[in-house]
Image (cartoon, rainbow, N blue to C red; front, side):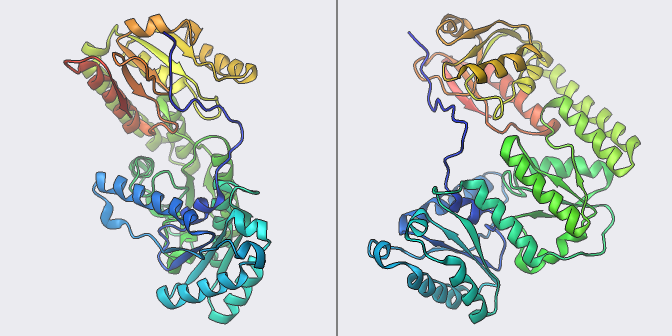
Length: 431
């Protein structure tokens, strides 16, 4: 029986909507409000994101910090596609101002608004004069000529232009750039923990998590740290960091993504050089290494020699195998093979093969050849859920892996606990 998976995607270009990105860039900036110049259904997307964020925060006990800003739809209807929706937008702005008294208004444009050709920028300018508050509009329209991050970065740039100003620097402070689950997310918490080795305190997270009235003060940070991933996300966040450096004298740490032990060491040492605190960096590396080794030694009586198969179906720009293979070596597990799913084109497959062979000598096989190995493996680590074999013990590999030493230990703990499970063998675990 052939391997069957869910969500076998291999696109090279994003096809997401810019409007949720607009909302996310200001989602917890109290004092702001967002208008979706859109039909009613479009606002449901942002509402769903808000609910998911609150559930994640509830799970780790930080929901008391959550207070998202209002997001309101202008409720475009079929008649507006004929007669235009500018008057509908004006009425919506009036209602939002009276209801919420925002200090800043942000307008996100839908595909419908783009097709109609509404001059949203002109409506924003006249509303700003009328109400005496900043009204920001973005130059992208839903799926038409933008995507999630285009909306996100457009709002970040406009918030910076309208609210930030040069400030005297506060020693030993940092500003986080990006989202990655917000201040209560694993990424931000881990970065704060690592910064504490150097006596650094985080004073904010931009965009999305600084109240409007406090935005001018964030440039008092001594430097910024990018909470980036790979590809366009990291590129876009780097542009924001560069803007803060050039216009507001906030330099940024250019070592970007502490995933896996080697990258965490590189990140700590780069931070040490950046701060001229190399000795503290080496102390941090030594202490973090001791934590990692201690945990691996604790669980190797279970993990050592266990047979595993790694299944990969994402492009290299979204998933790098090095960190996973590094963890498996640390746990002294036996990698039987690397299975590459059939959704790769020739170019992307070669990129992934080159990345794997630089890290591991295990055979690289195709989807059909991998079936028998899956049936006999103790553990399968996979980027896509394998749905036609209920007997497999699977660990689903996330698009954005957990960062730092804490992330590495959490991943090892997930492997250990999955191997320790009693009773029925099958099931999937999400890291």
